[in-house]
Image (tube, rainbow, N blue to C red; front, side):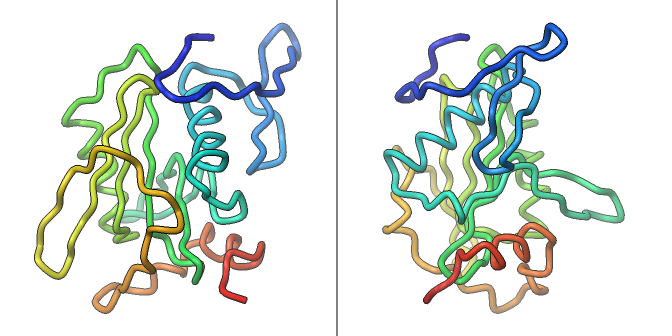
Length: 177
Protein backbone atom coordinates (compact mmCIF):
# COMPACT_ATOMS: atom_id res chain seq x y z
CA UNK A 1 0.00 0.00 0.00
CA UNK A 2 0.95 3.62 -0.49
CA UNK A 3 3.14 5.44 2.05
CA UNK A 4 1.12 8.11 3.85
CA UNK A 5 2.04 11.41 5.45
CA UNK A 6 1.87 9.97 8.98
CA UNK A 7 4.15 7.51 10.78
CA UNK A 8 3.59 4.03 9.35
CA UNK A 9 2.18 1.24 11.46
CA UNK A 10 2.42 -2.44 10.63
CA UNK A 11 -1.13 -3.70 10.29
CA UNK A 12 -2.46 -7.27 10.37
CA UNK A 13 -3.41 -8.05 6.78
CA UNK A 14 -4.72 -11.37 5.48
CA UNK A 15 -6.16 -12.54 2.20
CA UNK A 16 -9.60 -14.09 2.23
CA UNK A 17 -11.20 -15.29 -1.01
CA UNK A 18 -8.42 -13.53 -2.90
CA UNK A 19 -9.27 -10.16 -1.30
CA UNK A 20 -7.09 -8.39 1.25
CA UNK A 21 -8.55 -7.82 4.72
CA UNK A 22 -7.11 -5.65 7.50
CA UNK A 23 -7.72 -6.11 11.21
CA UNK A 24 -9.56 -3.16 12.75
CA UNK A 25 -8.46 -2.99 16.40
CA UNK A 26 -11.51 -0.91 17.31
CA UNK A 27 -14.19 -3.09 15.73
CA UNK A 28 -12.12 -6.19 16.60
CA UNK A 29 -12.61 -7.83 13.24
CA UNK A 30 -11.14 -8.02 9.76
CA UNK A 31 -12.58 -5.61 7.19
CA UNK A 32 -12.02 -5.15 3.46
CA UNK A 33 -8.72 -3.41 2.79
CA UNK A 34 -9.61 -0.52 0.49
CA UNK A 35 -7.42 2.55 -0.01
CA UNK A 36 -9.73 4.53 2.31
CA UNK A 37 -9.58 1.78 4.94
CA UNK A 38 -5.77 1.84 4.72
CA UNK A 39 -5.87 5.56 5.57
CA UNK A 40 -8.33 4.98 8.43
CA UNK A 41 -6.33 2.17 10.02
CA UNK A 42 -3.03 4.03 9.76
CA UNK A 43 -4.62 7.24 11.11
CA UNK A 44 -6.27 5.51 14.08
CA UNK A 45 -2.97 3.88 15.04
CA UNK A 46 -1.27 7.27 14.71
CA UNK A 47 -3.82 8.85 17.07
CA UNK A 48 -3.34 6.10 19.64
CA UNK A 49 0.45 5.80 19.46
CA UNK A 50 1.54 9.39 18.84
CA UNK A 51 -1.30 11.58 20.09
CA UNK A 52 -2.36 9.64 23.19
CA UNK A 53 -5.95 8.88 22.22
CA UNK A 54 -7.27 5.91 24.22
CA UNK A 55 -8.50 3.18 21.87
CA UNK A 56 -11.61 2.75 24.02
CA UNK A 57 -12.56 6.38 23.25
CA UNK A 58 -12.46 5.91 19.47
CA UNK A 59 -15.18 4.39 17.31
CA UNK A 60 -15.13 3.52 13.62
CA UNK A 61 -18.21 3.54 11.39
CA UNK A 62 -20.47 5.25 13.94
CA UNK A 63 -24.12 5.34 12.86
CA UNK A 64 -26.29 8.41 13.15
CA UNK A 65 -29.59 9.52 11.71
CA UNK A 66 -29.73 12.87 9.96
CA UNK A 67 -33.06 14.12 8.60
CA UNK A 68 -34.42 10.58 8.67
CA UNK A 69 -31.46 9.16 6.74
CA UNK A 70 -28.92 6.78 8.24
CA UNK A 71 -25.34 7.98 7.89
CA UNK A 72 -22.00 6.71 9.17
CA UNK A 73 -19.14 8.80 10.49
CA UNK A 74 -15.81 7.23 9.57
CA UNK A 75 -14.40 7.83 13.06
CA UNK A 76 -15.77 9.53 16.17
CA UNK A 77 -13.65 10.27 19.21
CA UNK A 78 -15.22 10.69 22.63
CA UNK A 79 -14.06 12.77 25.57
CA UNK A 80 -13.57 11.48 29.10
CA UNK A 81 -17.31 11.89 29.74
CA UNK A 82 -18.22 9.69 26.73
CA UNK A 83 -19.43 12.69 24.72
CA UNK A 84 -18.47 13.01 21.04
CA UNK A 85 -15.69 15.57 20.66
CA UNK A 86 -14.18 14.85 17.24
CA UNK A 87 -15.32 13.54 13.86
CA UNK A 88 -12.81 12.29 11.31
CA UNK A 89 -13.63 11.74 7.65
CA UNK A 90 -11.20 9.76 5.50
CA UNK A 91 -10.71 9.58 1.77
CA UNK A 92 -8.40 7.40 -0.30
CA UNK A 93 -4.95 8.91 -0.95
CA UNK A 94 -5.80 9.55 -4.60
CA UNK A 95 -8.97 11.51 -3.70
CA UNK A 96 -8.45 15.22 -3.21
CA UNK A 97 -9.81 17.02 -0.16
CA UNK A 98 -12.54 19.26 -1.58
CA UNK A 99 -15.27 21.54 -0.33
CA UNK A 100 -17.65 18.62 -0.78
CA UNK A 101 -15.74 16.59 1.85
CA UNK A 102 -16.01 19.48 4.32
CA UNK A 103 -19.74 19.73 3.60
CA UNK A 104 -20.11 16.01 4.28
CA UNK A 105 -18.39 16.16 7.69
CA UNK A 106 -20.28 19.38 8.52
CA UNK A 107 -23.60 17.59 7.94
CA UNK A 108 -22.58 14.92 10.45
CA UNK A 109 -21.70 17.66 12.88
CA UNK A 110 -25.21 19.11 12.72
CA UNK A 111 -26.17 16.13 14.87
CA UNK A 112 -23.07 15.59 17.01
CA UNK A 113 -21.84 19.20 17.51
CA UNK A 114 -18.25 18.26 18.22
CA UNK A 115 -15.40 20.67 18.83
CA UNK A 116 -12.99 19.13 16.30
CA UNK A 117 -13.38 18.13 12.65
CA UNK A 118 -10.59 16.35 10.80
CA UNK A 119 -10.46 15.41 7.13
CA UNK A 120 -7.60 13.28 5.80
CA UNK A 121 -6.66 11.35 2.70
CA UNK A 122 -3.47 10.17 4.37
CA UNK A 123 -1.40 12.69 2.43
CA UNK A 124 -3.13 15.89 3.53
CA UNK A 125 -4.81 16.43 6.88
CA UNK A 126 -7.06 19.35 7.80
CA UNK A 127 -8.01 19.91 11.41
CA UNK A 128 -10.63 22.47 12.36
CA UNK A 129 -11.56 23.66 15.86
CA UNK A 130 -15.10 24.97 16.27
CA UNK A 131 -15.96 27.70 18.76
CA UNK A 132 -19.73 27.52 19.23
CA UNK A 133 -19.81 30.33 21.78
CA UNK A 134 -18.41 32.85 19.30
CA UNK A 135 -19.84 31.22 16.18
CA UNK A 136 -16.43 30.75 14.60
CA UNK A 137 -13.89 28.13 13.61
CA UNK A 138 -10.19 28.00 12.93
CA UNK A 139 -7.89 25.57 11.20
CA UNK A 140 -4.94 24.39 13.25
CA UNK A 141 -1.59 23.15 11.98
CA UNK A 142 -1.48 19.96 14.02
CA UNK A 143 -3.90 17.41 15.37
CA UNK A 144 -4.29 18.01 19.11
CA UNK A 145 -3.13 15.48 21.63
CA UNK A 146 -5.96 13.82 23.53
CA UNK A 147 -4.81 15.25 26.88
CA UNK A 148 -5.04 18.80 25.51
CA UNK A 149 -8.67 18.45 24.36
CA UNK A 150 -11.06 19.95 26.91
CA UNK A 151 -14.39 18.34 27.61
CA UNK A 152 -16.82 19.95 25.21
CA UNK A 153 -19.80 21.81 26.69
CA UNK A 154 -23.03 21.22 24.78
CA UNK A 155 -25.60 23.45 26.44
CA UNK A 156 -27.90 23.96 23.46
CA UNK A 157 -27.92 20.57 21.76
CA UNK A 158 -30.16 17.57 22.05
CA UNK A 159 -28.43 14.75 23.87
CA UNK A 160 -25.38 14.06 21.75
CA UNK A 161 -24.74 10.94 23.78
CA UNK A 162 -28.01 9.37 22.66
CA UNK A 163 -26.41 8.01 19.51
CA UNK A 164 -25.66 4.30 19.50
CA UNK A 165 -21.90 4.84 19.18
CA UNK A 166 -21.71 7.05 22.25
CA UNK A 167 -23.62 4.51 24.29
CA UNK A 168 -21.26 1.76 23.20
CA UNK A 169 -18.25 3.90 24.08
CA UNK A 170 -19.66 4.68 27.53
CA UNK A 171 -20.14 0.96 28.16
CA UNK A 172 -16.54 0.24 27.09
CA UNK A 173 -15.08 2.60 29.65
CA UNK A 174 -14.45 5.99 28.07
CA UNK A 175 -15.60 7.80 31.20
CA UNK A 176 -14.07 9.49 34.18
CA UNK A 177 -13.32 7.06 36.97
